[in-house]
Amino acid sequence: MNNKLVKSIIASTILLFLLIPLMMVSTSCAKEPAFGTLTMCESVNPETKEPVDAKNEFDFNSEGIYASIAIENVSSEDSYRFVWKSLKDNTIAAEIPGKYLESEKRLITGHISSSLTLAEGKSALLPAGKYMVEFYHNEELKSSAEFTIKSPKAKIMQVSLAKSVDDNFAPVEPATVFEPSEKVNACIQIDYLVPGDTVQSKWIDQQGNTVMETPLNIDREYYDPSWIHFFLEGSEGNPMPAGEYKFEVYLNGELFGQYPFEIIAPHVAGKVTFEQNNQFTEAKDKYGFVISYPDSWQPSWEEDNTGITANFYPPLEEEALSLLMIVLNEGNYPTGEKDFEDFVYEIAESTRGTMKQVGDPVFTEKNLKDGTSYAELVFYFNDEQKGNFGLLLSIFLKNDKMYIWYGFAHESFYQSLNTAYYTAFNSIVFN
Image 1: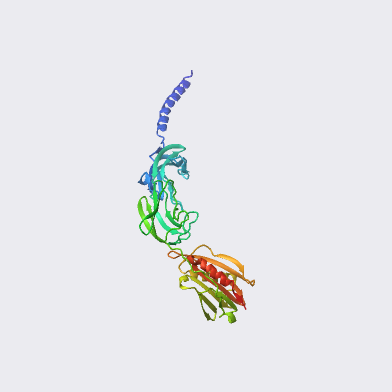
Image 2: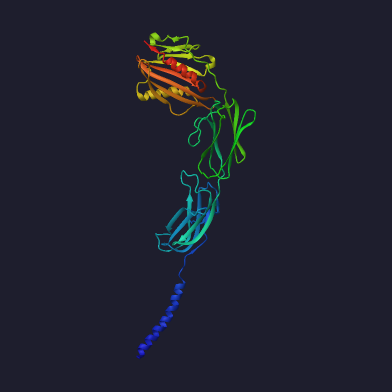
């Protein structure tokens, strides 16, 4: 063998043995990624993402929950993923993927975080319960942490007594005065329904006796404000006795409030009759009409440059009842459809005062005996202390004038109002 070739092989072998240790040293110096312990917290440092106020229990109404983890020697192109899930049924509440720092080609050391924050219009981040957050690096689980969202403490927001309720058991006709035959509804709005809580109602008469007591054990979760409904009514067709009562509501055994109300004695209105053939004729010549009015009622009228207003007063025992005929001369009443609508609502607003309107008015087109077309409108109002009232309006144009037949009464006089209103109105005669 050529001596030069032998020397070359020996030299190459020596060089190879020299390179192997160098390669081993180079390989052993490569920086491996490392990860700390995933930490749950109330917030993170906005610059470093380090955890602030570390904890594993959070209030139900927390506005944000954060998870933070330390990372070391992580490639900027590597991916991560935070998975938030329920320990109750393993369902995923949120999954947040990403890359560490796509814009830079370097190893990264520091902290990375994930969070759940309260969305607008939502009452809670998640339902009460136990949860876990898992941290994945390049789809490999590196760390996890458990946390708990504590059950909220239920609070009563409001209580209202009402004559009726809607489909959600919210009050529709708030009232504190009821007829013996009416149902007294107690509507309780509560912010959360939490299993284990109790809501209890008591109905107490004026002698202090408990008429009825109803406990309600909450057995489901509902994290939006909702209504709970209790009611009191006569049994087996027997009306509730008249008198003063109060409704009491308890939350978890503690008295929240007392709400007085009254059941009034049934009103026996005097019978409305027209046997005496009373006629209001004072407006016949100038305003062109004659109208009958009930026996024992007294008419009164006044006139100004806009027209005439004739009042018909019932006996004193029927004082929660009014009948009027208003006649407006041409130029003093609305002619356009929108103006007419505003005009009618002005009459209703003036009548109800501080009372609340209940529902929309009922509108009907009808005709008088002589064929004259008129609009009938019915409004209902509610006074928290006095109960419900009704307003009847019949409006029509004739002889270049606007006629408004007006009836108003408390609900206990509705029968009297209907008899007086329609019998008199059907008797009207024009020149």
